Length: 401
Image (tube, rainbow, N blue to C red; front, side, top):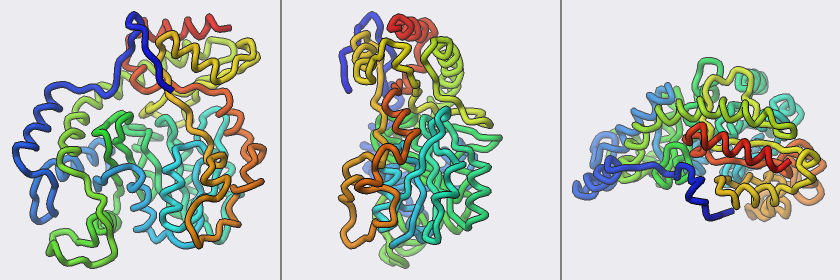
């Protein structure tokens, strides 16, 4: 959904960049080293340094940079041995990549409904979805809001399941003293154009296991091994490497992130408290134990009865016409045509999935259906605006009653 903003009410635009980004890209171009090379024979330095710097931010031992967030999830699944006929439990309220990465491994995503207040995977519903075919869980930290990770980990350990955290929205999020991405076996991040740390495209996988990190590196770099001969391919792999240009841009964006992250969290609390004072507005509630939030999006849920039975589309239109930036909500995965009509991998039996045909009926996913039909999302850059700007949004929403 696009719109022309009123210049008088203009909000921060994204991405935010300056001469630091421009000059670093020029430096890479002039160097002629546009790719990273290998661990033992560097061509460029930015990919290797970014991996160290992002690992430090996320307080994790290992980071492997890749070309986007989708293949970050896929690579983690492949290396953990997820494959033909395996089932992977995924939040129903997320971008398609959280599930399409599972499909890419010939495994089957199983959709889990969400909590009505936190808007993330309801861990209390996971055990009912586990079968003898279940091999992993992908919790999605929507809007940077952590899933209840301690309880999720207990379930995973008890049932011998892997956890691959989808952290595409959750750069810098912290839950009960630990950065997200550190609670499971691996965490997958995206640096796509709209993300809070961005290079247009890009991704990363983090983990604390050196053995797993080596396997992931080998998979994303054509089956090579660290410091091995470049034309020796020790296992099946593919090419998901990140370029030097993207990594150089990310390093400069990473420098800006801590201050932006702090401001987003400060303004989110202020903005959320103001919005929650409006009868009929419910702001996404942070999961108990969340200490920092990435706030890739800032979702609110409205009660149509309190706003003259306004529809979601009308609500979006009114905000947009008033120059207030918004972003679309993800349609629930079970409702997408590719899953509803089972337009996926040939030769894979999806009959045991909890979606497809009549099983994709919204009544089978009541919470996410209700939330999706009456929710609005603001982009993260709105949280970089002044309090006066945020107040103007609150007052405009109040005026719609």
